[in-house]
Image (tube, rainbow, N blue to C red; front, side, top):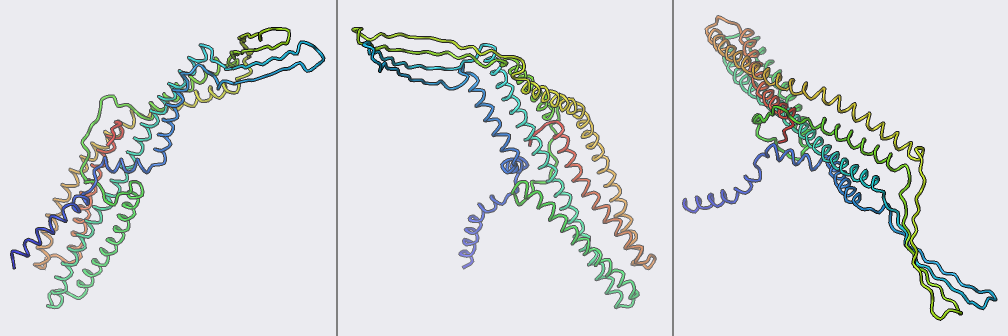
Length: 401
């Protein structure tokens, strides 16, 4: 019978293995990919990239517009004995001049580069938001765990105090003081639980995932000369605006049209119909006023993109230096928090011994316990702060998960 039960347990464990595999926490990259699929800006950036690729393929054509097919027919219905009839079939198409075509191709190429740069900038922005949401939730979670652990210790301590109160070793006021500390800790746990739920909800809304990735600091992948995605996007926008200005200057006149026609003339006096082929070229006359508004818009776009590139360049180095300083400070703060927690644990141990021997009061012991708990929470928060500092340095270096 025991063998049968063990076999059933083994079968159940094997069947449960796929569930455990599915329930494994996601990685940082999986969280980023999930957020990218849900981000509205991602769909816009991808659509603009497809739009730029289509425009680039269209710019390779010499045709400025779709060809036009024409058909005309004339007949002599008067009293003339010639009985003349004419039929004409024509095809007309506007074509780009060499300068206009090269300007269109340059604009299409710059537009494709701009779309690619903005796509990378959008991906990095989404990665930064994911990193922030993860470590916000991690900080709230570790705070909740520390407060729950503190509550458990206080409950055990309060039970001990109550036993000593009943035994007549402590006053009833000491029992009430210990009990109010338990209630205060319960309130803190509830507040921390609410904060943790809110932080996890923001992460879930961003990624759609129910669990956080493993709360380990990211491996640092800092580069000496990181490519600032925002700066590259601003420079690409400036180059596209300059290409649009060159196209507007090259298109002050409308593109010329080439007409090809075939005419057939039937006349009673002629034995056979007369056929002819005609070629015509129409060259529109343009002036600077034709595209003045388009050129002005291009100049505005150039000025805007240049200002954004200048601002991004000024902030690129500052963000990286700030991230490095934040990481160094987080490491130092973690060392200091650990040293403080170690000292306070030793201090509380001495106070507990003195309290049992009647050399210290309950209020002093509770104060020491509260300080020790604050130190433990500070250590946990500094661990999360160090993880966030790693993430922010990778973010400032342009590193995607």
